[in-house]
Every structure is written in C-alpha cells, then in structure tokens.
Length: 221
Image 1 (cartoon, rainbow, N blue to C red):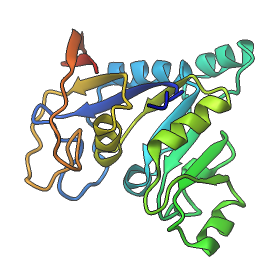
Image 2: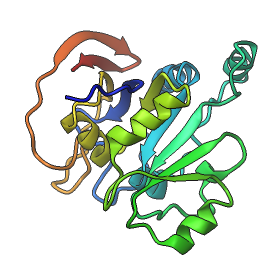
Image 3: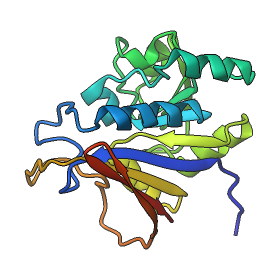
C-alpha cells in the first residue's frame, strides 16, 4: 500500500442547526456571527493554503484572503506570503475570469482534470496557475500530494458540501470545525455540510465551544 504524503487537512464550515450551508437557491447566506468570522480569519492566517470547490466560487465569489491587517503583517514577519495559497478544485475549469479568487491579492492554483477544455485552461492560466490531476474529476489525493511537495503543510477547506464529501469519503480529512448558527433553513434541495455520495464515516467529537449565539463542534476522523 502506497503511503500518502499530504498536508494536515482541516475543514471549516458554517451551517444551520439542520445542517444546511445555504438555501435551495444556493445563494450566499450570512450564517456565521461576527465572532465566528474573526475565528475563521485567524484559521486562514494559520494555514498554508485555502481550498474550495468550484461550486463555492460560482455561488459566493469569495476572495479567500486574510482580512485582518495585523494577521497579514504577522504572516509577513513569519517569512510567509501575506495570504495563503488559494486552491480551487475545478474539474472542468469553469472558474469565471472575473472571479475574485483570480485577483492579485494572493497566489492561486486551479486544479483541473484532463476533461477540462484546453481553451478555458489557456485563459485561466493567464490569471492563475493551472495544474491537471486526474481524468474526469480532480484526483484529490494527487492534488494533496502536490501541495505537500511544494511545502504546504496545513490546508484549510472552506467548502462546499460536494468537495467536503469527497475529501471525507476519501479518508483525506484530519479534522473538521462546524459552526452551528441558531437558525433553521430547511429545504430538501438545500446544500448540506457533506453532500455527494452516501457513505457512513465514523468520527470522534473532540470538543464543543460556545461562539456568539451559536456553537462550534470540533471533530476528528
């Protein structure tokens, strides 16, 4: 059995009490409270890379950068880039060229598969690094091995549910932090924390912390 050299993979996600991360329209919702957002910024600053799936980019158009000037300054003092590497898992290379994740605030790696359109790859390559991992879908194990080989030791995954599901079912997640907000979203088609193929995976609850009016659950796999 081949030993997989990969970074520590930490998933952070905010959800309603019924486990939804958005509503049926999949639009961006304010689920985190101010205190949770502050914690998320600290977690970003402590990471070497921030990973999201293409669905999150299309729905939320996130910057995936450290917001606090003090935290960015601390990273520079530690001889790191001001912001972590941004990693977009995008098998078909669908990331819009206008996406904030392709701006010049941080380095970006777009991970695609061989099924991606060559012209799309060429255009995106003008704004970010593009690398191929896998045939029809991005091979997440190979992607993580690649990140490890370039010095990435801690990856923070911020969604969405399909990417999280793929990482969890592949046994690639080390720890997960879920912030539960005091709300119920509902909707049979609303995206959840862990969408994708059904597979029961055991885990261990490490601790629960009160955060604002909600609470955060820390889970290890």
